[in-house]
Image (cartoon, rainbow, N blue to C red; front, top):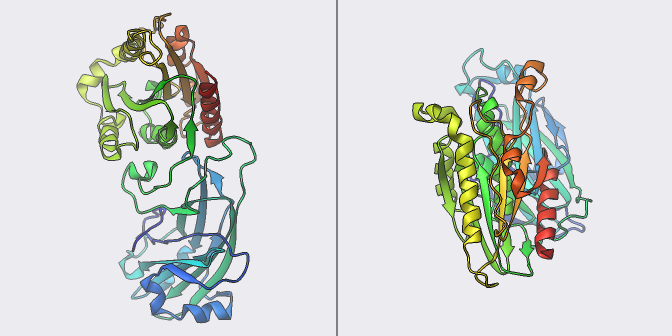
Length: 429
């Protein structure tokens, strides 16, 4: 199978449902199967299409409206649910298979299938409905999705047709950002961190930056969530789920006259875990290794011993960049505008950290942006946990003398507004 969905684990083997999406034809066109799938050759799919909708096996199909993702693309989902009683009833030698075929207005057809071997399910383990989810990035438009589910032994089958409408964004920001992108990009099976960064996404955002003077941009990613959240094992991953796609989006800024660098800071271990200069494309294999080494769930004794020095390490890293920005020659070509864009969740350092502010250097030809993600505990309705977490952002206090522009965001829309505002401001500087 070439592609698989992300599937919810419910104590049973995962059913993989693999889907493709393209725009609904405005007029009938001759079908062109772009990605033929072997599963379609095992069943009379064309006959099922001609017969129309069937439901001989209980199921539910849900296609919610696509929404903006942290990758700054519209994310489409197709969800299929099969009752647990149905799985229990069919356990044995049966296989359940799902076929998906989707066509665009140019007549292109994408096919794929997934199977679930029911005999591999342990008796008594299937106590919840089986939930299947497929995801893909799409452009605005109308999509047609055809699904078929069948039992390999009884040959009972379902057939359904659904429409999917991707509404264009109406905020007026970044109007050409999706120019030149593929209509659809599917999510492949993914291991840890790949399922956040999505290296299979090959389309790049259209983010040209034309400035009045040379500019050197450095994207700074703080990999460490607030130390008040370190008791939550999921905090590290949830932090990356927003910040990593945002970093990837900003890394696709095309600087007309200048350069773009990326640095990842591990504040817990006091190290620069990743650095790449003049990027054309992020070096994902190296960055992924940095993410593994910075995992706050794998804290070593040495890091714990020096947690009271984390704020000082951050302040030192910022000061070092300010000094570099001030030491260049005074010529226009030799003294580009230095732009630092910090991506970090709201940060509270452990008690005992020195929170003295960074020293501002008036000679620094630089601009700092602070894109702050509001990361809440998963059980954010628990008042006790909220009381522990709420408070000032220590990074804001440290950066205050440098007069950064702060963007406090919680959603993909918030990151989009920050991206548009930063590009607009830099183009005018």
